[in-house]
Length: 156
Image 1 (cartoon, rainbow, N blue to C red):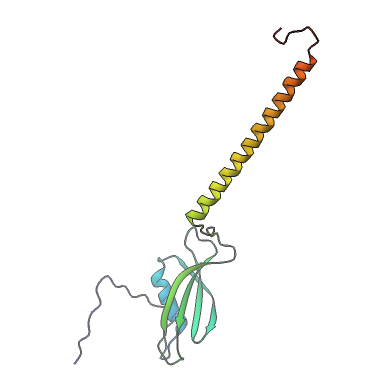
Image 2 (image 1 turned 180 degrees about the vertical axis):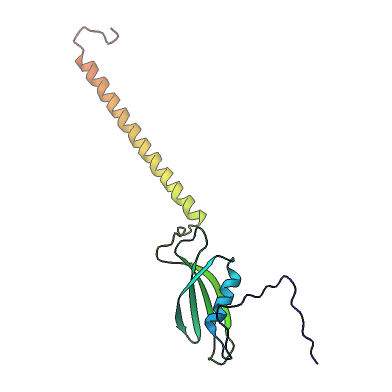
């Protein structure tokens, strides 16, 4: 006869809002997974679900996590048929349409190349500006010398 093992004290079972029936209630199964992943007050109201085909369904709950406005908890579950036991695929937070998200990551080599190209352009522009300034200075000196009357000395 097999002995029933007790769960360790650190394992906390979270009961779903709905009682799971004889056939598996996949939404309740997904809710248990979402509650296990989120902190106690981070899981909001159930939003919707998406049938992704081939027995895969993703369930969404609103997130009440501070700093994550318009983010949702998404739980993806696979169930071969209504009588089979569901399998948990993933539990993640996904951004909504109005969520604040980080910009796309750019590798350091590309950022460095952009910086170096900018530096080269700035050096070229500085050289052009210096050449224009030298030309203007030379033309001003020529005008100043031309303005002097005959017999006047440039040193006076």
